[in-house]
Amino acid sequence: MIAENRDHYGFPKQNTQPLSKEEMLKINARIEKWRKMIPKIPQLMANNDSKLKSRLRKGIPEGIRMLIWPCLAEIDQMKIQAKRTYKELIESQEISPHDSQITLDVMRTFQTNDLIKMDTITSQSLFTVLRAISLTFQDMGYCQGLNYLAGSFLLLMNDELVYWHLYSLLTKYGCLDTYINPTNTLKYFYALDILIKQFLPDVHAKFTKFNIVPFYYAAEWFITLFSSILPMQIFLRVTDIFWYEHHKTTFRASLAILKIRKEEILTAKSMEQAIAILKDQKFFNNFDPDKFIKIAMKDFIFSKKDLRKYYDQFAATQKK
Image (cartoon, rainbow, N blue to C red; front, top):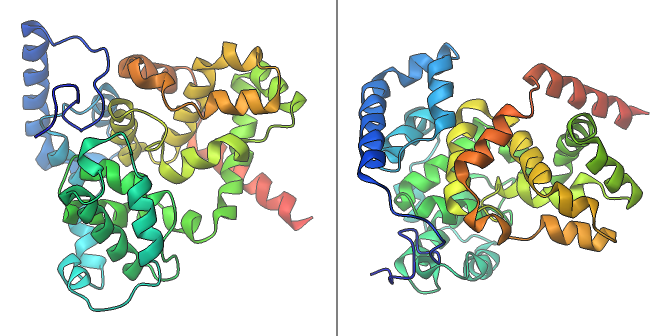
């Protein structure tokens, strides 16, 4: 049973107001709209449907999120293309060389969360999922940072669904390349630096003054997809969009963090102080998720074509 001072995800409660009757009615109406859309999601995704995009940016209501995410992540297709089932993996007697590291990381994951304390059912499930991933993707093995993603997902769904959502991220969304070789994130940081200069030139100037490059503060953001830095309610909203808009979402969320912390960054007296501001995990605890998403999606307009151009520019610099 979760204590009264905890939210239903097991984290310490923040200063949130209970929903009014009118707000509950609106949420119920949105849930009903989503229910009607579920059978159409595969076709809507294939057609890059604008209504689906709009609804995802408004956020999936909590009561139906776990019916929507498997459709967006194409979990059924993941199960077809995979060589082994989750049941086969967890029943396997194979020895994983990563067991000790996974155990250590499970102990470090969300230490303020009541549901993922060591020796709970959730912590045991977290170990099981991460071990199954290490057996599936043996070229990668295990990558630190996956524990936060898996831990966040476990607060929503059972361990098998967590495994398949991670499988989708690693394959369909191309995250495997990043985890196998973290230097593959350098193209993302190159692109992020260009976007910061374009949209937040004063922040970029400050970073330049202190010799701060995106790798110093954004590596954790890209590796954990914000699961380790943003509170659950904002992380879920970002992830709702990520399933549909892919890595553009990661860049927009990164830019939103920088814009929201802009005044503090500009008054920072040193590199260390500026980076500490961006690594502060408590700042967004009481931040309005709707406001965060509005800033991320409305204030930073660029295309996938732009990102590909920046990736190509980075590749060209590596050949010199």
